[in-house]
Amino acid sequence: MTSDRVDLLLSMADDELILGWRNSEWTGIAPFLEEDVAFSSIAQNEIGHARALYELAAAELGTSADELAFDREPEEYRSSPLVELRRLEWARTIARHWLYETADEIRLVSLKDSDDAEIAGLAAKMDREEAYHRMHAEMWIDRLLATDEGRVRLDEAVDELWPYALGVLDDELRDELRARVGARLGRALPEVEAVPRGVHEAELAELWEEMTSVRRSAPAGAQW
Amino acid sequence: MVTADEVWAALAEIPDPEIPVVSLVDLGVVKGVVVDDGTVRVDFTPTFLGCPALEVMQRAMEAKIADLGAEAQIRVRLDDSWSTDDISAEGREKLRAAGFAPPAPRQAEKLALVQLERGFRCPYCGSTNTKLENLFGPTPCRSIRYCEECRQPFEQFKTL
Image (cartoon, rainbow over all chains, first blue to last red; front, side, top):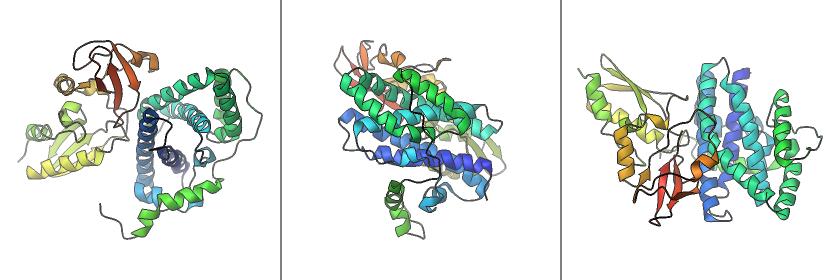
């Protein structure tokens, strides 16, 4: 049994770790060099956020950030299915990036006022760093909305990912996400059920195999 | 017995692992030093949480303090207590001299892309006719800019 606090920290940490991993899959193969740099840097930052969140959880659980990141079974991760999807297609990647960063901002802003000083402090720091991720995502939304083809591809991707995007947030924060995404796109979003956290996409097991393979190959602990 | 001043002086000799022209003290990431008997407690704030140099910085501080004959306890503060505004005037000048545009001051309002697009000064020729090429660069703390005047790309420390 874990506390609500640990649940919250692990949910956010798992989101950031898994999305960081997914973003890093563009390293070397993004459509052009500037995006290769951008996605690689965003990935590095998300994994840094995951580490900080895992450290707070680890202090409460008496374990370490690495053990939380790599020594759990795939079904124990609390990540939202949005970040687990493997979408190596640019419009969907941008739509996922934008939907996640928008949801993440709503979540961080709600946590900056937390009574828990450690969580509020870390949320404030993460929010300042995430501002760069959001500017990057918004720049791409401007670009996609500027052409007919971009608009169509963004709309298709957002509709496909929308139930997943809702699942990033707790119920009480979803209306704000709906309002913000709807206002930016100038249209209503589909009325659908959220894909809940804790239900894993098949792609997570595959990602986990790869992500934990080095650590599992040296159970006594690799020395770098 | 080591003094806090000696510890500060020793920490000021540690270069940033990624941008070695500035020291950890120039960067403002050392928030406090308390000497208690044979133990030195250092309050340390990460720059960007994704910075790959954070552990190297911690190990370097531990080694410097060990050289002074004391035991280091590094407390990492995972909160919003570090800003690029904490980089010293000297540190900013060292950045500029090494070809990095220093960060703009932190603003009260939410950071917007439009603020970053124009107006930063080229560290090579001093022109403000520069443009943002990429919000992201080789490390989490840097953006890439281009000077339209001297045609030189350069890096800028992001405001945090």
